[in-house]
Amino acid sequence: MISKVLIANRGEIALRIIRACRELGVRSVAVYSDADAHAPHVREADEAVNIGPAPSSQSYLLGDVIIDAAKRLGADAIHPGYGFLSEREWFARAVRDAELIWIGPPAEAIAAMGSKTAARTLAVKNEVPIVPGTTEPLRDAAAARAVAAEFGYPVLLKAAAGGGGKGMRVVREESELESSLDAARREAKNAFGDDAVYVEKYIEGPRHVEIQVLADMHGNVLSLGERECSVQRRHQKMLEEAPSVAVSPELRRKMGETAVRAARAAGYVNAGTCEFLLDREGNFYFLEMNTRLQVEHPVTELVTGIDLVQWQIRIASGERLPFKQSEIIPRGWAIECRITSEDTANGFLPSTGRIHYMHVPTGPGVRWDGGIETGSEVGLHYDPMLAKLIVWAPDRELAIERMHRALLELTIDGVETSRDFHLRLMEDPEFRRGEIEIQWLERRLPSLMAVSPPAETIRAAAIAAALFADSDRYRGSSIPAAGANGTQAQPTAWSRTARAEGLR
Ligand code: MV4
Image (tube, rainbow, N blue to C red; front, side):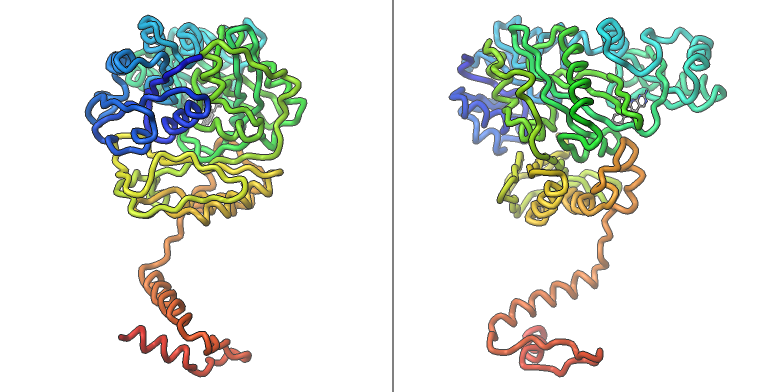
């Protein structure tokens, strides 16, 4: 068994990994930038080492420095978390070359899924359905016109090296094709240093459903069911749930078998996720494989009872998966809200500051995976995701009620957060009916925006609250009811005192 893990990450995911290590009796080493010297993950790990200044390009992205630290502190493995170095093939290779254990998929599997056109070719060879389109980059506009005519408009131009929606262009008619191709190429070149672009048929209004897989070194590959991730804005997920209202047990089995085939084809080991589009007719198309642990992994943990991070460490240690596919059945419903330091009422602008007070929800079925505490400084150097609030309940309706209750309990003072936005999301009738797809949130945004009350209303409410609290000191007097015929109630001892106290 691995005995000491260096965690090449920060924030909530570093804490999540530290907790898994502790439960397994594995020692943990945190790394931190100057900005994170007092961060919770530094305190909670068994050991911690500074790796440089605040910008991640000078700290969390310095693979060589991190590998040196692991060697120096006697760690035998590195867990990359998500983001940062987690999907860099060269880093997975460098960790292996340094004779450390990489808690993630083999560098070759990262490479196999790294290029979209390569992944599509691999999918076709292994009977994994993909969106109709090309598996080769386009030569020129004439080739694009021919292919688009074959598949029919609308089409989607995608960067071969792409991800996260960069270098993507919807083309609705032939007259737009050439300029869109130029634009997609330019964007792809800028973002990935590679201007290769290919064509897919554009799927209108699909859901984003992904399948969690877990594979050991002994040829066991399991599907842990789906996550519904359609509630997103500009490719940033805001909420995830498991299971999906759109997935029947039969579809789950089919998508699961497909994901397992894709993982096997890539020589996959450890935890990974296959992303699919699920259209309105129930057809699903493989998009890409995320070769890392994902932010939203907790919803799968809650409905399967399987601790994914512990199993990542066990798999990397050479253990066999003890589960049979037939035993893995999702139970109940889990929802995750990503609590971000964003001002959702002002175009989701990042909000910064010091968290001077914070109260975290507790009670039945509530889980908090956070990376912040009272006193934490929230700056602009890192991702705005502060924490994840996750709930489990027997069914979706109860899970939504539970999330609503938990969000009401949550207080974070000092920075703007997405908390109120998530509250309104829980109250939204369409969301409650499960009528969501990838464009739903952006269409619904106006009605989900904060209706912040005018300053005078907040002032009046604060005065009323102070007076009400004060009234508790006069328990003998009763609070006057409004007159039954709508007339003003007579002043009482309570209201006279309240006014006097308020004026004092
Ligand atoms: C698509 C699509 C519609 N049709 N492909 C966006 C990022 C990349 N992972 C794939 N993406 C899409 N590919 C076809 N043929 C719509 C999207 C898409 C999307 C997919 C998943 C989650 C959110 C999304 C938001 C916008 C567009």
